[in-house]
Image (cartoon, rainbow, N blue to C red; front, top):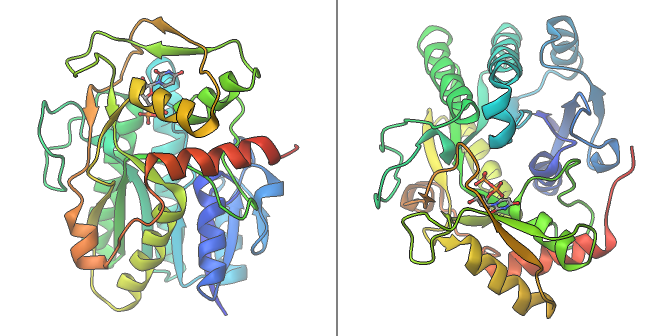
Length: 327
Ligand code: UDP
């Protein structure tokens, strides 16, 4: 079996990626420091606890498993926190990724799939964000991911590190089998916070700003189901295995929904009221992030299957009611 090193494999997207890799016949080896991840979420292959800032540990793990490729999910990823603690974002995300990239190259592991973000684009009024849109991030999270993309390009030039960069839009939903799901502590993302508010686990949802230049004044995002997202990663891995070279792909659906529209869909799916109040804007938020991701469809053959808001919310709701992890 072919080993794939999955950093952040104990996290939300990484754990779903491990399931997709195992299903495709690979052995996903999770490397995770468990600061935001959950050992309970590692179900589909071996687990190695470690930090990306620990170069010795990284070297050991590459030597032990000799992975054919890396899928790099491990990162700090909250916009609000990135605004208040930029140093943590630069150190963990950029220095950590540089360590990983160097360890991969030293071990001769030259296929690398990287999870980047639409937050690297920043605000571009009413422009469809395709892969050639200029990257002008508004926060240290997006800036740290853009920097890692640049490191990958330099390592390709110097060391022939082939890479696929996926710029994600907003990921939601959960494994429909209920084996893994989204579970952040603290939670900051819209869909799980809203489900918490619906079933009384928190007082209510705060809508961050209603004075944006959008039809209802709330921010617009492009939501993509986590299972569709990780399917694209397996296709990206196959792309590299076939020697097709380095490439950037947006992963979104091309449809945008406002915060108020997500609330309305959640009411309909759960048949429950969403208690919410209106608050101020959250620093660092872009008005609208919607993908023009025809490239992933045309070149990778990627077609989202579960990425309607109804399916994402109902899969997340099922997980929310039945699934959780313990430290
Ligand atoms: N949002 C909100 N209230 C919350 C959390 C998020 O209104 O408690 C909004 C946020 O301003 C953004 C959208 O929901 O417009 C998605 O935010 P999330 O944090 O889920 O993802 P991000 O877009 O930051 O990656």
